[in-house]
Length: 206
Image 1 (spheres, rainbow, N blue to C red):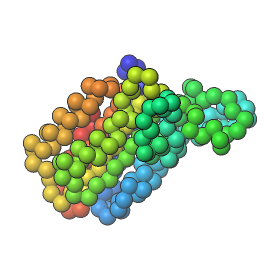
Image 2 (cartoon, helix red, strand yellow; image 1 turned 135 degrees about the horizontal axis):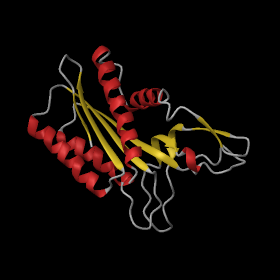
Image 3 (cartoon, rainbow, N blue to C red; image 1 turned 45 degrees about the vertical axis):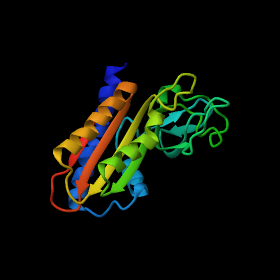
């Protein structure tokens, strides 16, 4: 595993969490749905020097590294196809941009460095958080015989809650993330529990 790359992604994710917590504290109602979260994170990532660049593909086309609703890799013939076929946010691998004379139609075929799946819940129970994670966790696990969706995967979950989980519930979510991490060390699991009142937010990054 590339430890330097892992630390870079942790740094980016911690920066996103910190900015999001600060902005939600100042403007607690600016996130209403998942598309708001997607737009917010895309904008913040565009300020990261590792992401905000154009890469020349060698055929007079330039590829911007960040995309929303970016197509995932294909499954092998005969394998079950998931309902969701796109990353909410994808950052392309700038070292593996293939040559292409048709930039538009090759979208979705260029290798993804970080693929992000997003969820925003309002006052979700612990079970609802588990269910939301379960629906997306397969994209972060590389199964035998299946094309890899991305070099690294991020599942980014936000719960806008009325009150804090008790300590045991919060610990259970953290433990659940750690168990998922054992299945794929090249995935990150983010949980942010925030509130529309002056209570300090909880967050987990595994």
